[in-house]
Length: 269
Image 1 (tube, rainbow, N blue to C red):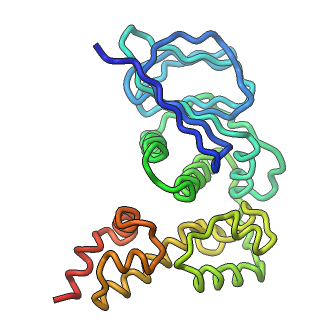
Image 2 (image 1 turned 135 degrees about the horizontal axis):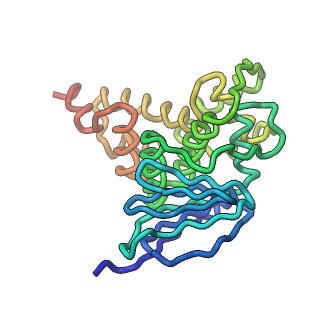
């Protein structure tokens, strides 16, 4: 018999999100909450209602609940479902939507109750799994921003405006000169007196990546130089501001598509 479990992800550095992973098949009455919510079944099938409509929620489908939408989602069978349910602050979502279209000034409800898309479904499950792993909050925030920019872009008219801001060059120079540090969005916001989401928008507009991704690429590029020169993996990780070898290893592999050890062996005989 499968044991019933519920795991919850919350983080004081990411106060805009709560994520639940569970295999409970408790039946919920119709209810609503003030958050924007996104749910999937990792295993199993359920009946999902949203306002006056009912759907069968199966694999490759995401249930979408706008703030205050009256809904319920219950298993079709006695077999325990495994599901993820994420709750997001609408003001955070609005800021992400604004990265897609700068004219947005309040949260734009998603016009669909259900999205059937295998690619988005798999990316969402990967995101949920990632949040429960031992990554820094900056890394988790970066993954959340990237996923939800793509998600909301499915429903919004994208902004093609080219942003010009002299502070962008200053921020890039600052990151290049301080690549060893673990600089957060909040750090950049305070130093340059800019809204953190505006900084993200600048980077996405000019570099097609977030500030965190840019800083990470700077670290990895520097680490490649050091490994070529024969530095040890331990010394390289420390020199480039990674707090441990596993942190260095997984980010190097993600960007270079090979491990630091394999990369180093190509240059050190």
